[in-house]
Image (cartoon, rainbow over all chains, first blue to last red; front, top):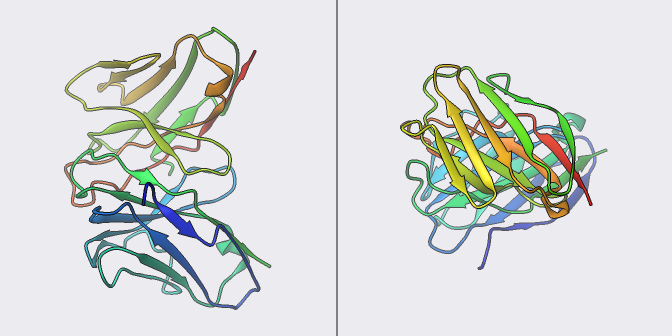
Length: 115
Length: 115
């Protein structure tokens, strides 16, 4: 596609539920990133994929968070047993090869609200 | 995120004026210094970036000034326009590390340009 696409744009769930957030990167981009942006804050790094593998998951806050990218294109961020503190905008970004200083292209994000 | 501090938190300028936003960082491993622009409901978009081998870079109305010894860099927007009203983030990274897109975002500066 023309840009990074994220679905859904909004997700409302109840505390304790499981959610999946989807990211479609720019076609041909091998590097994919997930960030989380809380209200009034800058985005925080969660995880980086190079192809199908998670090259750096150091930003995942705990084991309730998991992400996959099975075919090296679409990625899904999965959150188990959601908590109110998980409410934030989850941003996905991609870049061509993940090389030094490459431009990251961000999607518009998924606004997750945990009630 | 405390590694990166932006100032001011908010800024109001008149159309045609100069907007200046500053970023101070602690991590001496950072060697890629971008500024991102974010509009409400959208993901951040790369505005301009600099590497530490130069002290200044200009692209149109936007200029980055870099002071390696002070561990600071700034964004200057000349002839500010109402369309520049957005949130601006500095987001330095270690481009020589293994996760090149692992940006460390500042807390953001909300810029308002009055017509």
